[in-house]
Image (cartoon, rainbow, N blue to C red; front, side, top):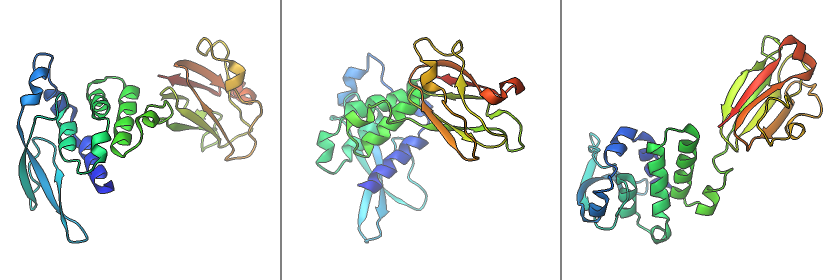
Length: 246
């Protein structure tokens, strides 16, 4: 099962947006999806235990040179699903497939292809990968599921009194980890006039300074907008930073 999941996710990551867009049905043709019949290729793989398994290739993908593929037809039970979701559904050889939320998975795949917003696409990709790995929908839909942490150095490696990088962008729910690098002590204090409305400056700013190299300060951000901050001991030297939360 883990091998199949990894194989399916590799197909997802290698699929071009243009190929999926071209296969996305419009409003007039969606009613006829239940009647389509497509020829798909299954790649025959010899497993370490000597048995042979068939793994679906993305529709339109040619059989890899030197490998054996089997042809099959797909249709009838994949109404409204894009080719990758349809192919996975047709080849899910376990009872888990009957309980899988195919519509949610399909929606996330379509979002990955259609959305122009990076954070939206990243969240949809993480949810689709989680669902394919068997994670509960209630878990993958939690805001923190796709969250990441970005790092900012406090003081450059050469000892300059700067944040590095001075400006970063993250998604709502992500965290930033400030690392005391060189030229300390340092801290992070947000400008109360340079943060989104409703955000409390004291709650996101540091109470103390970091004196030892390698010490860190981590904060998660749930409100979108621009955040201006500075290092209090070195503000006069121009040690300022900017955070953009999308």
